[in-house]
Picture 1 (cartoon, one colour):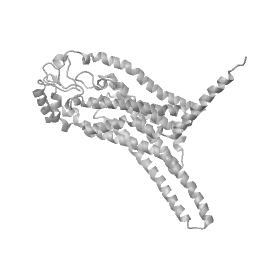
Picture 2 (cartoon, one colour):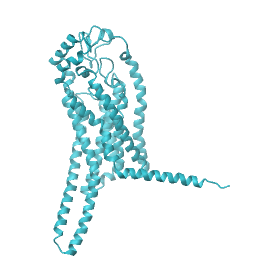
Picture 3 (cartoon, rainbow, N blue to C red):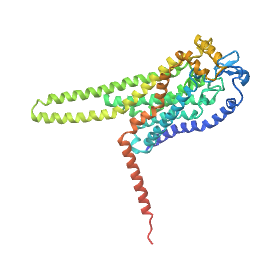
Picture 4 (cartoon, rainbow, N blue to C red):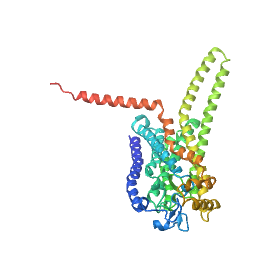
Length: 442
């Protein structure tokens, strides 16, 4: 009874976080739109500046630390999009926002299943539930910007968002940091439990699972508060605000690596142990076949029992192994994407501007006044110095499809849908029984 009570309280706590987040979004969004009404202004924003540059004089804006201007003409926000072909980046993120919404629905199905179905309320299923709740929070960030990605990216026409000039960016950034740490830490906890249970025959993680969950939440909250208190959450490139460049490795990527990489290595060792045990049992069976008939029958019986245990262990392990593998691949892809590609458009490249930026500006000034196609014409001057579209698509798709991948791992289980069938059958029988009891005869 106490276990179910603590489980219900724990689940209610996590869902309260989701409700607070969604309750805050409309208010913050309205506040942001009021402050940035110039974005919807019908007035000319180019003035004497060639398209796609924005005129400070025409808009009445001022240059900030997250904008790039020369001679009264500024790059429109987000800065990186100016160097690609027009709307190329936006189309990618609009498509991925739909994929993220589908991922959200997929994870929601798993979360509801693990909350409603009685067989999913025990450890380690509770850890899987917690992992999926954190993934639900992670995928929900797409609703912060669905339909208008500039709400997250920009504070105004020329200024990129930080948590100081765009409240929505700050909230969304904190949600991403918090949910990412929850994802990695709960996955690590699940892997650790399976390792101790399979290799050492110990249920130590299960014994202290409540303390483990408290530790996961406390650590996630800590690494969310640190960059937030320092004001180091901002938009760099992509569709989300995250820990600001210069602080992201120390406060985000390195702490995640401490758990993500060892977690996968531990689980890989667990899988090797299971494979070795299966191989040794097959050798024992082959050796025993040369013995007497009586001994052979006895040995075969023991081997079959061992083989059944190993097959059962593999069936338990493969879902968690795939989960760890997908998370590690997603983590590595996105980290390398941020480190290698996003560094190309770091603020240091704009102050003073790199030669390729000056060449691009010269092209814009030559063609911008003649045609609004200048951005497409001049993109060739910048393409070799920008984050590659292919790497961008792979990295963003990896995070966008994470919920779909988890649904394929856990949602395709025959046992899950069998439990749903039994659940509805019992509910139907219960309702039918109550109705029959309430029938009165004249």
